[in-house]
Amino acid sequence: MSEVKNFNDLIKAGQTRDEFITQYKTLAKEDAGKDKSIFSQQMDDAAISRLFDSITGVTADDGDGTDNAKISETDIKKLAEYDGDASSITEEDMIKYYEEKINKSTITEEPVAGTESMTAAEAIDLMSDLQQLRISTDEKKLNILQSQINDLIQNDSKLSDKIKKEAKEAYEELTKLQKQLVSKRHESEELARKINITQAEITKKQAQYEGIQSSEKKESLQKDIDALTKELQGYQNKQTKLTTEMTTLAKHAGKQQKVMDGIYEKVENKDANLKTNIQDARKSAADFSNSVLNIDNTYCDTAKFNEIMAQCAAAAKSAGASSAYYANGGDGTIGQTAAQALANATGKIGVKELTGHNDGPAINKYRNGAANGAAWCASFVSWCYKGNGVFGYQASVSGIMAAAQQKGKYAAIGSYKPIAGDVMIQKSNGASHTGIVEKVDPDGTIHTIEGNASNSVKRCVYKPGSNGYSKISGWVKMSA
View 1 (tube, rainbow, N blue to C red):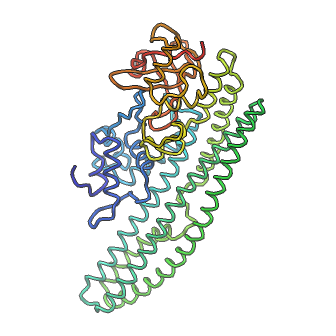
View 2: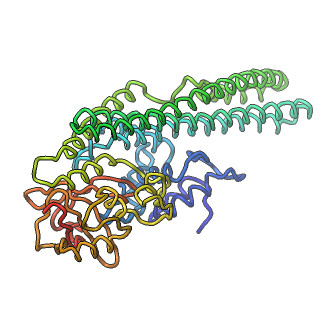
View 3: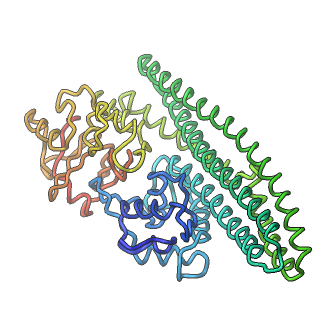
């Protein structure tokens, strides 16, 4: 694999998600001579994966839980054109793309085909990624300008070694403080993302609570709400501490900037030509310096963010009402066991893997506590149907299918019309996948809720004749 030195070395046609994550981490390292561009050591695998999804424009789900996405020439050309220069993809391209996507999208309980829509969790992630990108972009531009000023001073033959040394030491101290502050800002934005997602989840649980009659289920939901509230308080406490640390760093960086300004004035009095060049660079750096050092600058359009969060709350309530509907027995066409399984499944929509590698506390829970990195679609279905008498707990699709066959509950594709609550089985060319049927349209389109679909719990749609539908091999009749 060739050496990666900048953003455009990374974004190559044919690049898979795993290759992209590996190459990104290589570029993010602060090796001499490499342009970090928008890259940050704070970016974990999940955030890098979201950047990959932005470039490809998809979350790469072929209906079998397999990630088939690759960056294409069309993806590269489309993104590169955002700043009017199709020759390369820049930070400006990415910022404009994120801004356009946020401004055009409506927050819904689930993405609606043919529309610009996204889920609450996706919207929060996108807003967070945009803010992180803006921070990194300003940091990069400021570093470039400050480095140019330092080079002008160090290469000027009219200046003494003493003043050059003084300028170099002050420059290094200033950039060190700025780097520490930017690192804290990245942490702060990530905490804000967790706070917003947790708040949205609490709103959803509260909506479920209001719609459920069973005292036992109410008690269970209240425990979930209490746990989430405690988790939220923990994030908020960390955010308060972090804000104090950022305030202290910003104060020190501000003082060091004044020291640096004093040195610049000394230097400028020594050489008229140098003065002109330095002042031009200082003028350009001023705005970026104010953005980086001013912690009140959130890098966020507050009005738009509030609008997004209002839509998130509405979508969460809608999802909560849907979950409560199933938990109370649905419309009477499905059995209580299937209803509870759908309630469990809808309540987990939006749950994601921690790093995109079959991992995370929630994923381990679906696997009965096992942190083995194994595929988890069957484990999720088993968790949703916990206590069922058909297939019990199975960690594999083959296990669910075999157990259902022994009980006489398996029907091959074409021999049975599935209904809500049934389990979909896909066995095709050695690949396996499963999910719970949520509803079936009159034209035969199947709507499911699945785990391990693009690294998350999500709703999927299979239209007759589609690639995904052709992989369906049969159904476990949980509601017949």
